Length: 100
Image 1: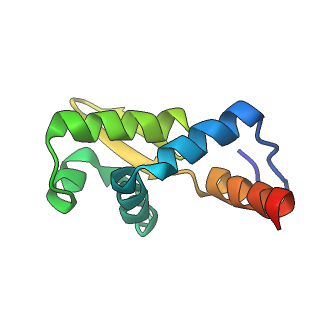
Image 2: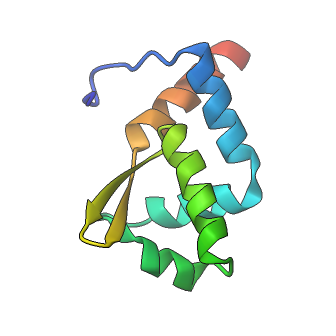
């Protein structure tokens, strides 16, 4: 994991995965909800916050995880999600350098 002083170089494929993940309003809302927490967010708590079926939530979480924006850890039959803010920062830095 990179520290605040290290920069992360994202590949073009990673950029595309992140852009696609963030383009969906529900995934954006999920990421926003997870990112406000200082600790992990259990999947069961996500269902309380967002009015979607468990299967749909699972699909969205998989997309966010594939993009590298969240990390999951299984605890028995439960899954906890952690925001990967360093990846989001790297994405935003790359957008700024490419487009601004």
